[in-house]
Length: 404
Image (cartoon, rainbow, N blue to C red; front, top):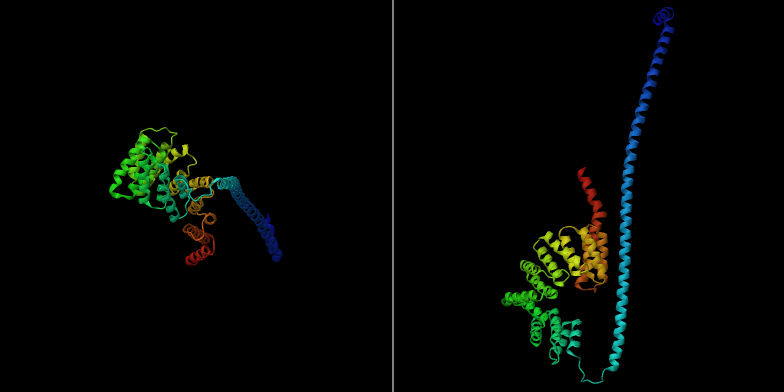
């Protein structure tokens, strides 16, 4: 019927008919536009809501990660503060102990000076000379003291052994062997002088090496003394005879020494060191662990264990042991160097530089060790600059330019 009305209007007045048709079409277009706008609005709202949900989810996940990182950082900070507090306490104790010792020494020197006869005929005993020789700072000073002690008719076997140790420290091996021989002649039961003599002959006389090692092994096996084993093990290290040292330590452990004895711990430690040199790192670690259970503060053992872990690329495990070493002796520059090298392994070059700087403070300027620490500190600083500084930025820019 609507169509008939429009047809009549077109017949009567074509213009009015066209206007009506235009209005109808416009109304239909507006209706479709409203429908389309509603659909678009709903789609946009859904997309925005979905995107916002994803962003909020990611933010929550990142927030959880940041919270965990902050928690870990706070824990590490607390551990560091605890370690520093313990280190300061130990340093204070060492300083107090050194001060007390110096005070006591000064008072004893005063007493000795008052009591000593004012005569040029009074001489020090061989033991006094031996003790002073142990603290000699130069070869010339040590030799004068050693000669005087050796020529003392009242010198005991132990006195001669002590000055023999000093001669060996200054690499006067012929003199040291002569002193050890004289010590064993004075007292055949001085087994430590015998062990020193056998070990030194093995290290310096190839033609007598095997016989001396056999004699030293027999003495250690008969006495099961941990000190003797340590000295003979050092001779095997010096000669690079790690397979023989391994066999020797296994033979000692086959004798089932008491687990709380020094020789038991020493055998496991030296066996671990021999296995480490043979690249049998898993077996070596087991023996280090056994020794560590009995002597958890053995500095030589901890140092060897740290070296093994670094060989295994497990520097994060070595770090706590290195801190233990430093807490045991905060005045030993070697432990600062070990910490610096571990931080270098871990890529913490800024911290490594700091530890090298601390090591420098304990070393005599101009010494080889001081130069080494200074050079390594410089390397650590350069590595840090390469990773985070202008060098790294320049490299990144260069790579980006090449990519374009």
